[in-house]
Amino acid sequence: MIYVSPLSAVTEAIRTVRPSHLVSLLDPESMIDTPEGIAHERHLRLSVNDIAEPTDMLVSPSEAHVSNLIAFIRDWDQQSPMLVHCWAGISRSTAAAFIALCTLNEDYPEEQLARLVRERGSHAHPNKLMVRIADDLLGREGRMRTAVEALGPGRATWEGELFAIPVHPERQSP
Image (cartoon, rainbow, N blue to C red; front, side):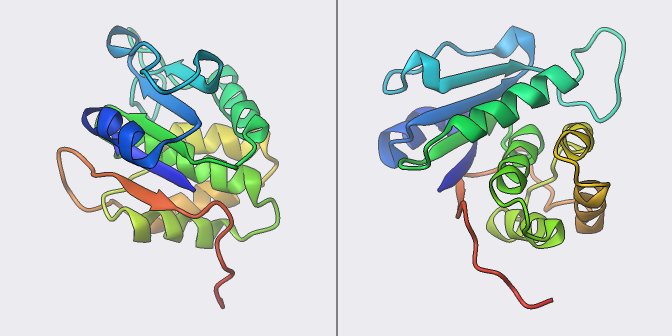
């Protein structure tokens, strides 16, 4: 199971969900130390700002960041949950969850995976730059980008809430 949360819910999520792996996607000034209950080597810390296009003075998600995320996902044994969080639990973390689903379900339709993220978290609005980079790295030929674009904006909120996504969802009829 993949859990997605805002930073404010991480401590409680670690206590209740008991993930073996944690992905933190925060701006460099807000990055957290590895929380109690998570092994240091099972905590991926990606210092990136939540921006959809490269911007001066901010850290854009890059190919290196997304490559590290994909490698971390592939190394996860899926025996215990993975928790993914960003500041608000809306954009970077939902992009990372979508990237995880696409990484672990290579022949599953991207549109269905994107819809699953939105169904589980109505506020989900995946970071388009992260998705664009992952689409290229995973050889999805634009299908990840198209799937996220088709979602449109998520439910407006200042902060998302903890939600869960099955790693290997049941196939849906087209």
